[in-house]
Picture 1 (cartoon, rainbow, N blue to C red):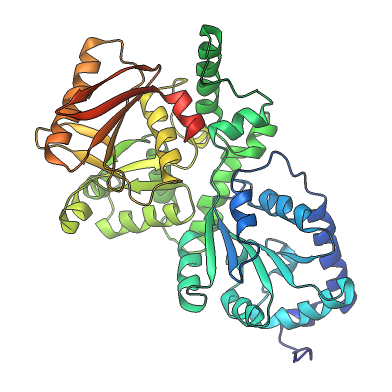
Picture 2 (tube, rainbow, N blue to C red; picture 1 turned 60 degrees about the horizontal axis):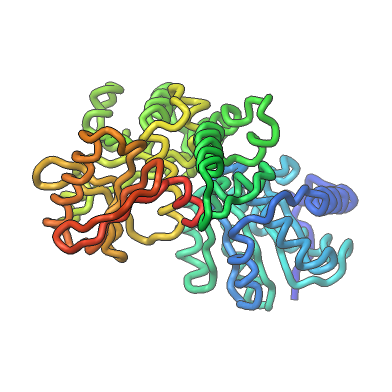
Length: 434
C-alpha cells in the first residue's frame, strides 16, 4: 500500500532513521506533557466532531491556545490512540507533502498502528491537503491546527470540500479569563453591590491584559510584543517577501492604536504615501489572514457601496493592542466595543455596523437576529444617553431591525422605540453570557 523507499532528494535523506524516530518521540512526549490548563469552551465543539469522518481544522492566532486545546482533546482520547506531528519544529524545515510516507513508516515502528493524526501548524507544509485527503480515504481521523486563515480556506476548498469541520479558537473569553484567574463566576441572578463592583473591576483588568494565555501566565515577559513581531515579520513579511517592511510595521501600529475606529483605504494610502490603494488593502488582508485584525463592513443593500465605504477595524486581543499600540485607559468605550465585537464574531455569521441617513452610527447590526447593538461605556451623562437613543431611533426607522440592545456599565430598565424593545444591559454580565 505504501512506498517507503527513500528518495535521495527528499527531506528524509537528510536524517537517519534513528534521528527521525528520536524527533517523533520527542515531539510526542513534549505534547503529551503539555499543561492542559483550563478547559476551553471550544473543546466540546471539537469532541462533538469525534464520531464524524471529517477532518477537524482549528485555526486562530499564534499562542491563542490551539496546541493546548489539542492536548486537552488528546488526554480525553488516550495516550495510545493518536500520532502527533508539530510542523513548527525546525527539524521539519523543507519537509514536503511527499515525505509523509517515510514519516508514517517511522510512526508505525515507534507507536504501532493508530487511526488518529493530530497535526500542529499545518500551514508550514505546502500541499498538506493532498496527503490528508489520501489518509482520510483510508479511514484516518485528523485534528489539525493552523495560523493562517487564507491558506487554510484555499487548501480546504480545493481538496477537502465538504469533508472538514472548521473551528476558530480565539484568545480567552471574559468567562475563560475569570476561570484562568481562579475568580468564581458571580451569581448573575442575585448580584450584590460588591459583586457588581468586583465584576466591573475584573472587566477593566481583562480589557487591559487581554486573553492570550502565555501573556497572562507570564506577565513579566514581553510575550505580546514578541508574538506581534513574529506574526508581522515571520508570517507576513517573510512569507509574502514584502519589500516595504517598514510600512507594514507602521500600518500595523496605526491599526492597533485605532481599534473600533473607521478606516479608509484611500486615506491610509495618502497617510503612508504608497502608490496604490491595493497595497494598503493587501497588507491589511495579510494581517487579517494572520489573525491580528478583523474588518467590519457597513450594512448596505448595495455590495459595491459596502466595499467602498470605510471599514471598522478590530483587534484579535485588546491586550495585544495595548502592548503594541498607544496606551489605552482601563476600559475606554473603544476597548469595550472591541470586546463586544470579539464575542459577537464567535457566534454570528453576519455582523455589520450601521451609518444612518441622518449621520448617526450604530456599532453593530445582526441581520439574522434583526438586532441593533450599541456599546457605551456610561449612560449617566444625559447627552450621551440621548445620542445613543437617537442613533437607534434613526436606525430602526431605516432597517428591518426589530429590537435593540445597549451595552453599558449597568443594567437599566428597558423601553420601546416605535414598538421595538430596547434593552440596557451591563456589558460585563452580557460578556459572561455571550
